[in-house]
Length: 141
Ligand SMILES: [Zn+2]
Image (cartoon, rainbow, N blue to C red; front, side, top):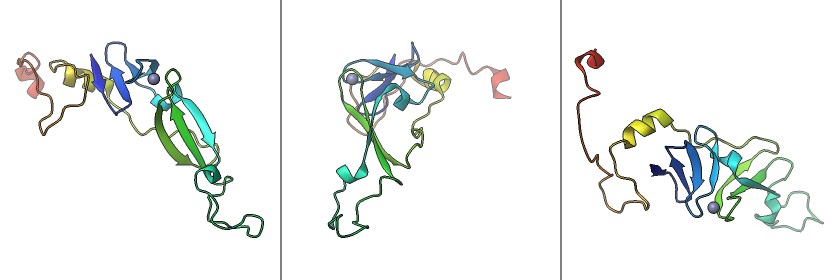
């Protein structure tokens, strides 16, 4: 069972791993920060936000100072799709912006159909079957 997470990422619940949605590359364990399974381009922010004033004449140019800010771009190591970008102080580890309880995710998707594309509409995917085996009187106490 594969669960879609973002437009670029999905989790394979059977192998408990992050995957690229575009090429299927297994990136890293699903209990890890997915960014650690990607290629990182540590960019000088002045490449993105060009100085508005002449840097020869002015110390402050309205461009971010690379000693205080870096732009990290994350790419799939197989197909090169850009997965994420973030602004961080130099040397800061990748921010963990997505973290699931994998066991709860498995229980949630146990009775739902696997989706290969995000559903369009207002209703989320529904369970295909329903039983009460996990609702014993003892479990309600
Ligand atoms: Zn890929």
